[in-house]
Each structure stands twice: as C-alpha cells, then as structure tokens.
Image (cartoon, rainbow, N blue to C red; front, side, top):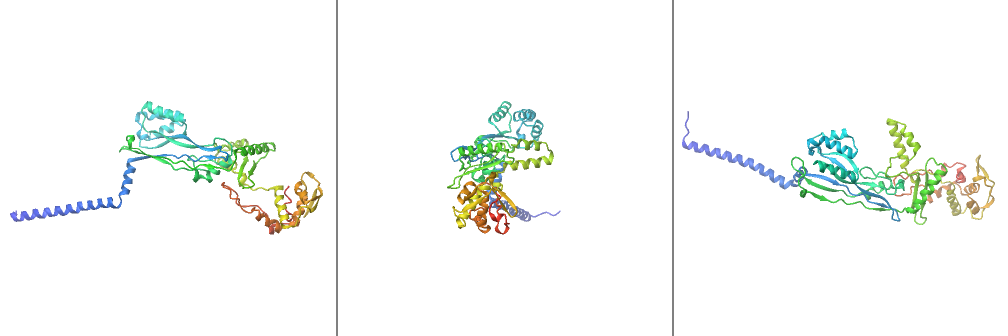
Length: 443
C-alpha cells in the first residue's frame, strides 16, 4: 500500500475543492441563468399560470339591452334569475344522497341523474338547473344553510322576457338559452343589445376550496344598449287586431300580413303576420292543427316536421315571402303611362265588362261594366279592361323600365333579417302577348 506524502495530500484536497467549486458554479450558475430568463423574458406567462391555479372565476352575465316602441312601450327586457351548479368534490360524503334527494325535489329535476352527478367525487362543477326564480333559489340556499352543505353554487343570471306576450313576435324575434339573438330584431341587433359580462375571481386553496371572501375580486357587468323602434305600439295594436279579425273571417290558411308606413319618411309604423307567436315560448306551435299533426309523428319524422313548422311560424311573411300586389300595382302602371305621355287623364277607354287578349278573356272585378270612361275614371274604378288598354299603349319596354325606376328590382334593405333578395318581375324580353298589356292579370 502506497502512502501519500503530506504534500500530495494537500494537492489532492486542493483539486477536490476546485472541482467542487467548478460544479457549484456550473449548477448554481445554470439555476441563476434560468431564474433570470423566467423573470426577465416571461414573467407574465408564469404569473397567469399561478393565477389559474389559485383563482376560480365565476361569470356575471350582463343584462341584455331593452327594446322599446316609438311611444315608449317596453317590448323586450332582461329579468334576473339564478343558475344552480354544484362542485361535488366539496360536498361532504354523508350529504351526497340527502342533497341529491332534496335538490331534485326543489329544482324538479331527475333524482337518479342528480345522484350520479354528486357521486362523481372528483368533479368540481356540474350544472343542475338554469334560470330558476328567486323563490326556488332561496329554497336551495335555505336547505344548504340548514344542512351545512358546501359546494352548491347559486349564481345570478339573466333571461330575456317579452312583457307584451304575443305582441310583435315576428318582428322582435327571440334569444337562445345564452341570451344571444336568434331571430328578428334580436338577431339583427345582437351586437348592440349584448352587454359585457362581468366576473368574480375567488381565491382557492390547494384542495380547490374557496378561501375567505376578502380574497375576492369583482369586475362589474356592463349592460347592453337599448333599442327604440319606429313602431308605434298603438298603431301596431290596431293593425294586429284588424289583420287577426280578417284572417278569422276569411279563414286564411297561410297567415295574413299587414304593414303601415309613414309616407313621408318610409318609417315602418306597424308590421304584422297573423296569427303571431309568443317570443316568450317561440318553439310552441300556435296552430292547433299543425301541432296535432306533428305530435302524431315519432322519431326523425317528428323532428323534421317540428323544425319545419317552427320555421314557418317564425318567418316574417311581410319581408320574406313573394307577393303579387294585385290592383294596387295599377298605380305604377298609371304613373308610367302619364310620365311617358302615352296617356292623359282625359283619354277615353271602353269597358264592356271583359276583354280578350291573345285568346284569353279577362273580366272586370265583380262583373262591373263601366262603359265609356276616362283614364281618371278607370283608375278610380280600378277597371281591368281599361288598364289592359293602358298597358297596350305603354308597351312592355316602358312598362319594365318603370319597375326599376320605382325600385322594385331590389331589396328594400330593411333592418330585419330574412328579407327576400330576389324579385319575381317580368323583363321585356320574357314578356308574352298577354303581359305586354300591363298587369292585366291583377284584379
């Protein structure tokens, strides 16, 4: 065995200390460099990760903006309600079954489903029921307080309500369960009516439980903007009543339509398709016969029939359906004839009660025989033979040019979704012999 001299021992110890120092510099230097990198180059990223682990956020839904008529009637509003959720992991084991039984009764939900949700002990969030009223929310809170139950969350929410019921349903439209517009003005002005949600941030410990309330941070919700329409509620009521009565009297199968406009500005003062649905319950079919037909089906056939029936009752026929204007279009024909100079108010025409064009006989309305009449008298009497003769003078080229002159070849651009973009108008090159005499088929 070789013995080290004192000089060799000192040398070995010196080398060992130097090696230890080098290793320490390398290790701690690397750690120091990494720490500097994290703090200097990505401090916000790690701060966010820490906050995500320590904070629990709860959304405070913003109230949707209100909708008013021109005369100040409230048509759509947001109403406070409550959503009941649960964090099963925070619920004591001995309260799982009692809580499931009690809350299923209070919330009128299925007991077995509730028990299954509460039995998932690792779950930190499950939805029990949305949009309950204050009385129900108070009953849940009272039971939790009386039984010391933790983990049952009662969160304030909002829901859309329409105080006037089935008034203006086809215009207002409705929203979905998250208060987003799905139809009508609610859809068209969704961005305007939608507010900015707030938030409550609550600190939680390593086990996921809430820490004392002084750790909470509140960001208030900002309500949406209100909307005031050109619709006058009084005129709207009169129009809906008149159209509804006409639909019943004449047994109209496909709903009746009415529009009232300001002739000076073009503002829509009233608009309706009757019968109309209630936007508070838009998916409920209003036609008893159609509802019975849908309910008689099952499976996929029922789903398709229900969807089609709902789409039909939601459709605003005043802007979404094509319509032959009938005798009201004689004003366009008359204006074109006078403007082009092919007719004067004193020009004479003969009405024998009927007139034959290209082998087809057209009659005057209600069997009238007006005899000799002036242009003005023919317009006042809405005489079909007279206007067939006026159309013949006007000619199909002039007749079609005035379609465009009156803006009848394009959409109106009304601020409602669903306006039909095409127009079933005649073009001069498509007109046959009958059409060349004007709107003779309208009476």
